Amino acid sequence: MLRALICLLLALPFAAQAQPRTCLVVGISDGDTLTARCGSPGSYEQVKVRLAAIDAPESRQPYGQRSKQALSALCYMEQARISPRDTDRYGRTVADVRCRGEDAGRHQVAGGWAWVYEQYTTRDDGALFKMQYTARAQHLGLWADREPLAPWEWRKVQRGG
Image (cartoon, rainbow, N blue to C red; front, side, top):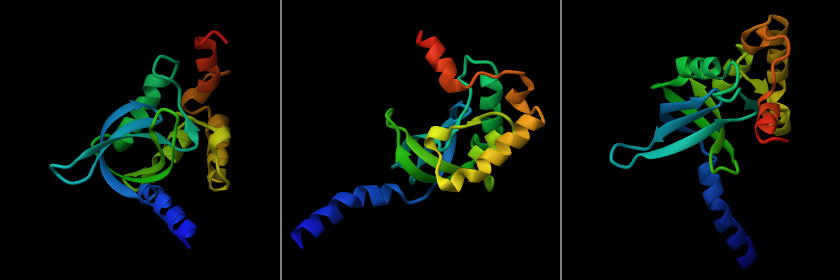
């Protein structure tokens, strides 16, 4: 009984974190990362959010600025519904984000501004692969490039590996 109570108490912070929140998007770092202001006036909390299941070109990478602009057009200074999935190694909240009623990750992939990040997908992300296939077939966004370099490969090159 005591053990069950301890487990329950330890799980409470995670359960609270997993609740969807509505926040104002106040910054866009790149095509898959935004900053949101959550909470009520006088007690705002700034949250750095990484869109779940996608990876967009880095800012200095080809198509990086266009990817950032696409996410900005959808979410910047808009109310966003943030549904956390996890926290990444940089302390960012990894989440599904909806702006203007649209899933931001799907928006980025469908427009050709991000890749599906296969390493971090779940069963529920299956539609993303279809969207990526369609964007690629239609040469949308970064798929206009014959051989676009995936962000994880670009980062590896930048590190010298």
